[in-house]
Length: 123
Image 1 (cartoon, rainbow, N blue to C red):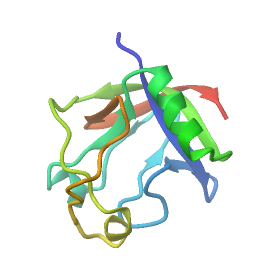
Image 2: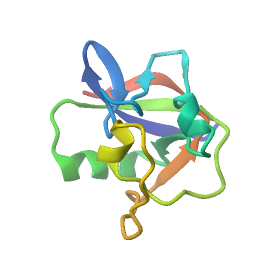
Image 3: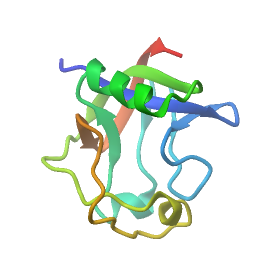
């Protein structure tokens, strides 16, 4: 089985996506249980984001130097064949999709339909 990696942040006692937490696009992640994107996002063709290898996940964490980030090995389902146009995080948190044409996803980003945290690697 291919290994994937998820970076989370502890928000209000739960593991959440490190890029969107506390807003309408927030996703809570659980160990040994599947997480899915909010319905309104999946209906628009957006999924959850993970990294394709440990090196890329660590590179992302190092770039942001955020001490609250946690790194997990995870299982995924429904890998998308390509990535969509990145969206504005501030608009996303309010429930709106605003494409950011010149933005890029971090190296090794993969979009999937479901994520299950398996093992805490760092954090």
